[in-house]
Length: 236
Image (cartoon, rainbow, N blue to C red):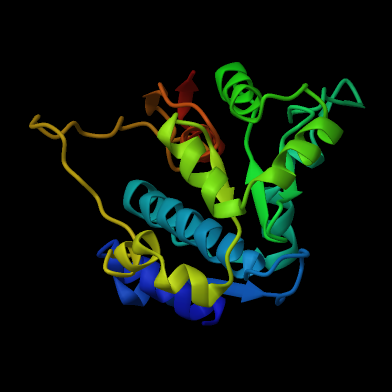
């Protein structure tokens, strides 16, 4: 599926007008990052959907129409922006725990460990009965199959995922479950009277909007950051 097709699906799922898609220009193409997945297309289409939504809001508030252009290379860089982040010109501290990553198990299959939270790290080490080193973890996993360790880790609420081929994932109960789900859903969680946007608008679509972001771990904070990029005052 092309980025344009993905974008159309996103846009229509959100109930937005098809005519607005004429304001959007997408450039570039996969592959832009080393991956088995169309990461560039996912990055470009999702960022384009957010940008075009902001442009639609700008038009409603200012009566001015904008054109939106998203290059796939720029979108891919945004998707892994933590690799380019600098503090006073220097790279920030390593964001991954030292044993986080991919490992080959005793059955020759691979899995990924996520151990950035201390309780996840300690749980993995307890389950494997090994030291906090890559070498020790790798050796301990030789006595496990990838899927058995995934199941054992899940039973103790750890974040471990066995790697599967596309065909294996399609046969997996979770893979089959998500196939039946829509691309995204919007759930109303409470009733309240609509609040009008502030009348004044200066430079960006969300000028005057305040956001209290109580999320954590990638997806939620990225939403708050995106709203801030389009003018909202986001507080974490």
